[in-house]
Image (cartoon, rainbow, N blue to C red; front, side, top):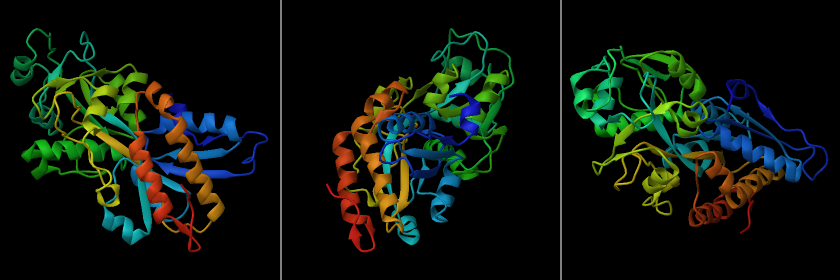
Length: 344
């Protein structure tokens, strides 16, 4: 997705249709923006619905839904059951993807470089600052590693992509845990910041010797060079729909309070270690019943008819058995003026 498209609001104005005068407003994560754009465009052609989604980052999406300035928020960082309860909110997953380390190294092809969890953490901590460092070259015998300075590129805004990435580093590196921790924003030990997935991608494309982290779809669309990563089972894997799906295979959505599920560092020899779901956040007791039902209708359609579109953009669709759990919860927990808003 070109940067100009990510910088503007998506507004689809279609003539006719039952939703011709209806506008849905959403804001949040840049991680799923290419997919939400595609879904919005196709649903508009089908129904006439107008969708305004602002790709401002997960932190902004959470803030705006709490302030009731949008009809839904979007975040890659799930809220805990306590946070949801305190704010009167409800969340559900819409798709699964992966966060991918990408590099700008001349002569290096996608997947040619292997990194271990501790190497990745130490690079982002600024402890390893040359690409021909002994620890990197020993792991990558046969690859001509340049004598380039490593420039770390990270997010400058509150970001669910950062939450997923730093959650992973926090799990696999005690040093990272002690010095930086995890969250939608952290105090970065090294590097330069770019706004949004698109901002990080732009910096990595421009800066020789750089390494950054972005959502996989942005890596593919920007033709950036990803690294292999060693997963929990000690296998080196490439990011792909299959490896993201493998990471999500054992997730227990039904028994997770508030559907708080984190997919980083999952077991399985085929699992991509920095996988994550992205969530939609709505009010548990919305004030506008008709508008809220239309919002749920859009996401119901996306669950049912949006799977192939998700795959075409390198996202993993939510499995049918999981979407059924979500819609059961809609019917049970989302109420407007005391009445159930959704019927199965």
